[in-house]
Length: 461
Image (cartoon, rainbow, N blue to C red; front, side, top):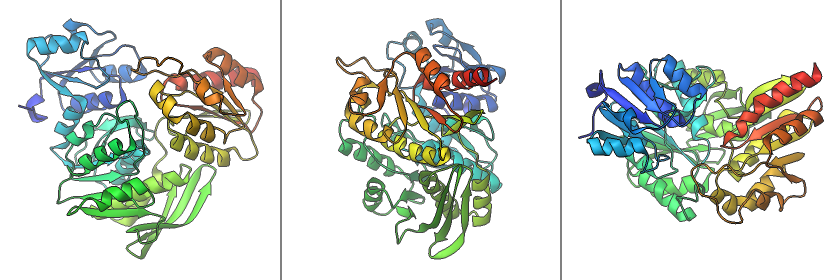
């Protein structure tokens, strides 16, 4: 029998891979509910240290004895079936849940809103949490990124709403059964799990079919995949947003600024005010429109929702300004799909103005690099200088003959340079006032951003 949150109070829950974005959020919520939290991760990190400060006991290695005495073990799909802690938990008969199942357990006790989509789900989830907070709702949330204003990726609120980022990468989001959901877009990705675009579309359809029929689906009318999904939903109420004429919430009078964006919102034909954001890009206006439409359908007021959106200051690793030194600005971003890179670099081009746009990109997974090499080459070509690091494997085994050179070979100005230190030194030495430097990718390329900022400080001091 699946446990409930109340049944775990005072009990011990062990998280294998506790430092991951999704797992750490669940651990935070568990700690705030007087649950004893232990965990393990392959390495120390700021996330692990923050959980320890909140009272968790965490080992920085995987050992079978770590699970001894636990009442429940939670693991992510990134954890191998041969992991010694997972094997020991099964041998001892300890109740074991996947991360998705554990999140579904938490969501089941609230009016849950699941935010899904190939791109934009972390930002949209974060915006929704901030907007609902401005409405006085104090939602619980579990998000795959850190909200800048709160410094947290999870919170156990006093309100009745639970906002959850719904990750489609392994199909496990069908566990959630939310009251309502947002689907920002549907595009082929996670090619290690979804061999074809049709497989991705089928997964989103299966997810949408789990939405409560008393609830609703909010979808982007500008996206063909999301629109096709909504058209197949039968009895479920579907709410559309976008610039497309006839949407339930239409954006017009759009202004894209260097570090912000603005658009008028028309709800069922009525002007309800302007969305004003402190984050750039047309894509972020669409994310905000999803939040506004969802909040309105939930019964919250337009002025409160718009005020909340205006206070949103971003999410970690989503066009995050890491430093500005002598007119050189350093940005870190999580973009790892050609579509994400395209919208990020278009926003970065406005931010750079007359300055150069310099990108350090790290491809994520061999399978994605093979599938989208041409798309990466095209989207990265929006920059003035592009340095491509070696592929971040994640949990994949290397594919013979596959390297980042597949991308740079298709580019006129792409540099394939695997050495992190050489890349940092090159960028630091060549930077000029007005330049924008972006570290881009879902792997450990983000570690270069503070190194570059420090190097620029030393150079220009």
